[in-house]
Image 1 (cartoon, rainbow, N blue to C red):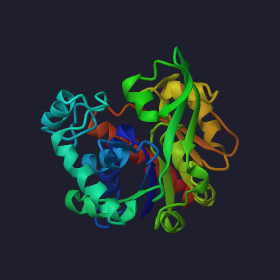
Image 2 (image 1 turned 30 degrees about the horizontal axis):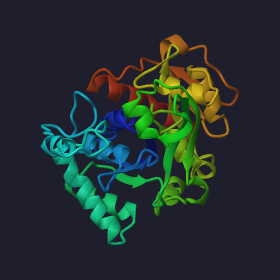
Image 3 (image 1 turned 90 degrees about the vertical axis):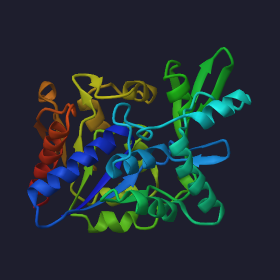
Length: 318
């Protein structure tokens, strides 16, 4: 099987781990080829270093280096450098880079400065972690998700990470924009992987600032529309499975429901849609909707969800 997955942060990374296990169970003698197109809209420069949170979360999770309890950052992490920077009064202090994590960002920044594109840098970093998938950034071009907010300082645009991490999305977003998307192009290998895929799976990542940002890169959505695509709902019974996807959906005027997210993606893109049992009434003309437990509360449960997505995708693609 040749599978393409779009992925954001924690939910996407954990789903991918379950997908790898489901593929081995389905065809132990024929390893699946999984290509992951990772969101780079969350990328940010901190202390002169280029940080790619979603790419790193996928790489660490699949490579066995993730902090399992929090779902991001390195296991066994320490924060001596962060504390020393704070002692000097360096900002921002709200984004917690750990000592082990700093090494990844230093190498990435040095390689980018030397002229290597992000896709080659990501490949080099993955050579250490061996995630078992081909991890591609959605684009080598610099794009960043910014959020327009309005508070006592007036109406202003801030980086998504400041809204998400520092403010915890407590200030309503007036607009969410992927700056630089119009001039960006898919990273090398992205469109080829989509064309060669047997099917595509959309994990339960944030539909606005994870999957949604990837779909904004010119050429990616149109390529996906030519393939069999199965999505896993990130909403269960009107609430996000994890994180604050509801705040992002509200910002773009979309209801927080499995039905609304399916309609946001559209029947031109999605052929199959997995929902939780409580959302089994969801329907959209031209889309096969199936219900199953969707809580990724254990490795086994996550594998079973991924297996259901595989079964649905293979059936629709045949």
